[in-house]
Length: 467
Image (cartoon, rainbow, N blue to C red; front, side, top):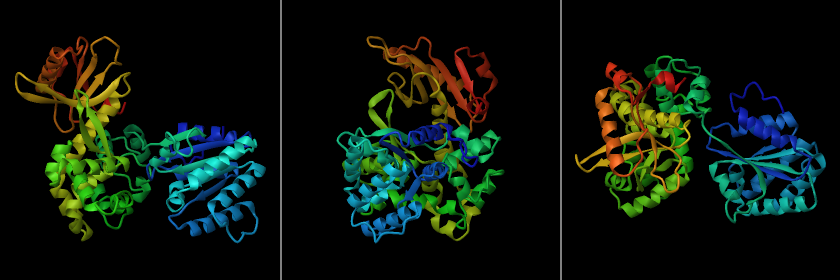
């Protein structure tokens, strides 16, 4: 296997998958897909791979078909050392020539930001499929990697052009919270949680902050995320500009703001935005497709769904930056941040900590989610932040392994346990198997002494989360 370059942090499994693909170059025809959200390091990885193997890497720009063909022709000429031709007339000619050249050279081909090419040339996936099929029939040793945003996966779905052709589909995700703390060089766990709640695990955000990692969190936020002179300040706006459709952009912004403020159902979002539920449904589907929102079922009421902001920086932007944009642009970051402390804790940090706790619970062999338990006797609803179910078994009651509540800024004690215990009793009456359910308290502030006397209770603090 090719040695991973020292400048690539982590990504060991991803590098292993890419090098395994590269090691098969010259052995036959193969297609690979590399996809993921922006700023995850796809280009960094594939450029490194092409350099290590002597392959051809072309990164597409947002351009017309004619200009894209001209740029592609020039890049191909530079790689092969042949004088640039006058240019290809169309992509059918270009892809056919590309395959012919690299079947002879037996080198890797990487077409990065492939969706940019498809926007101006919608037939390109079908053209690529046809040339791949010809290469397979002719036993031509062509190895092609296509890279781009998450919707690249659609090229492989159902009757999509490249269905059944790929031997690799590699998805790059943001760093999980433990790995992100490593990447940012943080050993202070409270600092790590607050930072991850602000910028998530996207690798590019450290250089976007000028390589400036936090020591004092409040000062760091003011001098980087809320500073117009730093690229990270503009990042959320650029992401939204790139992803949101033009005609109803104001509505999409309002829907995102409503969800960021804690309105997770269609009804509550519509009430906050001031629209009809049916119309809001279309916006929600579009935002899901753009990977800006994520919809999850209420695990205790499967017919109900709950929406959450997918990207932490967008949640931070909607709650802290967008309402005060004019003040921030005028350099009043200190005033904005001082006045936003409670909002950050309640709307950004608290929900993000609960999400981290669910990610922690996913190490168990079962389904993890959240939901609301309705108590018909006391006429109240009990929020369960982390529910862990054993795998479903036919003919048996659904077994609950754990019921958990997550509190970032509160010391947890007997009151929290009593609420979880009541939820367990209600679920028992509703037919769930709770015979060995563990009640779990997740806290960023610690636990009082009463929890030590509770035999069926597990206390998970920051030490265990990051352990």
